[in-house]
Image 1 (cartoon, one colour):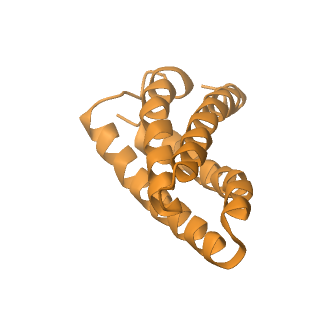
Image 2 (cartoon, rainbow, N blue to C red; image 1 turned 60 degrees about the horizontal axis):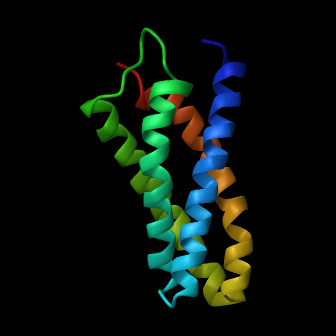
Image 3 (tube, rainbow, N blue to C red; image 1 turned 30 degrees about the vertical axis):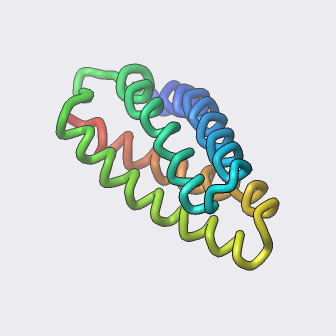
Length: 127
């Protein structure tokens, strides 16, 4: 499977995931929840969508699958990324304020998305 095709699909699906994630985070924090809680809510929303779409579309091939083992790997990767993201969002909120946290979230998630692509391609969805 071509890296270009996978990259294109990952970016498209990632864009949709990011919009869901960011929108939920902003909404939940705007409603008064702590930014850490709002960030986890957003990441869960995006992750549920992304695991299935990336497994069925982006990384679909003869040597990949979407099953229990892949879900376990995905959850481990997701927990690590969510911990990093939530810590970063919390620090930015503490130091610069909520609006800066909202603005910084895309850059943080883009960086984690690049790491997620490599891990997904070479580890998460492998049979």
